[in-house]
Amino acid sequence: MNELHSVLLIAALSNAVKHKSVPAAGAVMGAVLGTHPELRSRAGEIKGILGQVLEEVSALSAEEREEKLRSMAPDLYTSLFEKREKKKAGLPDLPESGNGVVMRFAPNPSGPLHLGHARAAFLNDEYIRRYGGRYILRIEDTDPKRVDPAAYDMVREDIEWMELSISSTIFQSDRFSKYYEVGKELISNGHAYVCRCDNEVFKDLKMHKAACPCRSQSPEEALELFDQMLEGAFAEGEVGVRLKTDLSHPDPAMRDYPLFRVLTSTPHQRVDAIVYPLMNLSVAVDDHLLGMTHVIRGKDHIANTRRQEFIFRYMGWKPPVYRHYGRMGIEGVVLSTSQMRAGIQSGEYSGWDDVRLGTLRAMARRGIKPGAVRNAVVEIGIGETDIQFSWENLYAKNKEIIDAGADRFFFVPDPVLVPVSGSGPMIAEAMRYPGDESRGYRSIPFDGSVYLPGSELTSGTPFLRLKDLFNIRVFYDGDNIRAEYAGDDLQEARSKKAPIIQWLSKEHAHPCTLKSPDGDINGVCEPEAVSEKDRIVQFERVGFARIDKIGEDAVAYFTHR
Image 1 (cartoon, rainbow, N blue to C red):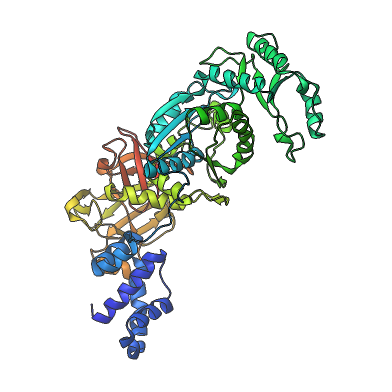
Image 2: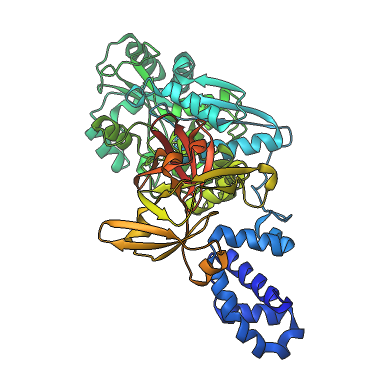
């Protein structure tokens, strides 16, 4: 290979690797003449060579292009693939954080945690790590209608998977006496009352900015009614406690919103109660009593923040610093707990870790690492602008974590057994990891017939390259397919633009089902690939996968490319 050919090949490989496609001749020509002005006088010669160079690049797989670029121009490869030191904006500083912070992650135990929960969990955790302080896990389980008893353990397991810096765990169901105490104080000070109005009547009054008759109660009368509530004197839906706010507030939802309700139709798993605090009361009380300095949550809670500020003001408490981030749209997976549960019960989904769901346990089953989820959501930040979650960005960050530890193996999807004549038994030696001989080699035997991907054969391709082995010529006679040895020359395969494909001999092929959100793929893989449960491998030309089941019929879950 002469010097000019090398310069052109490096430029073409760099462009192909960067943009994941074969470049146009003009792009390579421009890049070469821009970086090597001394070659402008040889433009005609370059044009004569460039076509051949592009054919060479086109014949290579994406992985082979990377390997070749790494060997020919390691510095250029490094500039494309390794992290460069650069200043990142990161998360903004929090005001009033000089002495450390107290923050919380507050899920409802209605089901396992999903990607939406992870955003709140990791953002808070990042600030705890930055400033120091306490990170409280607060299980908000004051609504028995939204409590799944199994979710307590699922939430705990998901928290452990995320590796959060949790200092302590609080269950709101253990704190009803504290909520009653604050409720009585609000009533005693004339800031709350017991409302016995029909809901539709109250709604009409509220919409007209009018007070209900109950609002004029004396504190003594209201306290007596509240005690009667606690004693079980009222039926569900008959009575409630409301906070006195601003009846002229432009938002009707702010006008005298409820603090407590009577609930008897759905017993709680952890507490024997009749009177239940509603979210804005319990959250405000706990944010104060637990010493929260900062609260970071979605902007769908802005209205709740305003409601809770009434309680802080009436009680004479200093509110925490609030920050609200924009909505994060997540396409391609199911996030609704009710939809997930219904799908599991109907048999549509195999469980909470079904890879079509957006739960964290589904991410874990696929081989997504918690550090990748953390990095993805932290990069999104706490801006108020609504954004769309990028799966591609998550996969890129996960690849940064798993790639170095993932050995390469062959996986043949929809395998077809094809006899190959013209060659005796051989053993192919394939690298466990591209470009790193220290990782060793895999020995893949050839014994006269091979499993080939069905998709390669349905196309009727007459010439193929068996990766790390040799070339074959394929003959098609109806359903009968055979092949013959066609030499070892890799350059010949590239010149013919022959696909370079994975293969396995019959005696060296282990049945393996590859599960993905798009459906199952039946195939065979190297036995070593499925020798260890939970390992992450890369199936060449397919993508990364987590080994979920070993044994006679192995199962792997597709992670991403």
